Length: 187
Image (cartoon, rainbow, N blue to C red; front, top):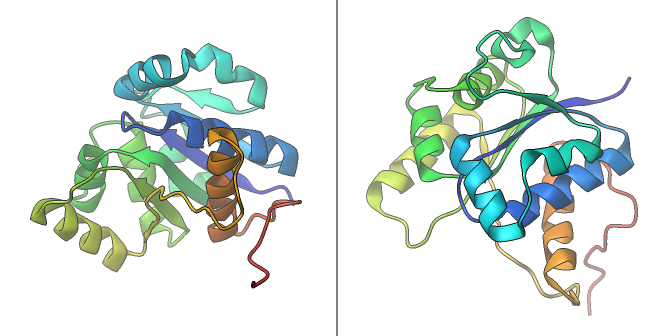
């Protein structure tokens, strides 16, 4: 059966990671339901010169961030996992404290209550105590925290390769196999 996941794009820096993740999910034949926040739209435009319309080609079904009637607002819709990539500290705080200000936060709450994988690619530095406490809260609730930290052992030739590698690791963490992903083989 085809995997069905939620991708949320919030307003933290790192839109390239989300785009590369969408590409990998399309290649893997995953059914993606996507949401982008208003701030996510601004960052996508600023960093990559793209609009959400430009992302339509990746076969995702898009939902408005204010649409609380969308499928992911209920556990009966049976999503397999959710990824927030990138994840702002504001979204982390809302999710950690059960505050559903938009569909992204509500969907994350549903994923947690249904005990499905929730991966948050939190994007901020340096971290303050509130950030760390919220990270512990979501971790204790069952989420996986996976900050988009670049790795270099696979010798990326450019930013796109670096982002694709990270997106592949995200896919691994939610149980989706990515063909051709470089893996550590030792020295």
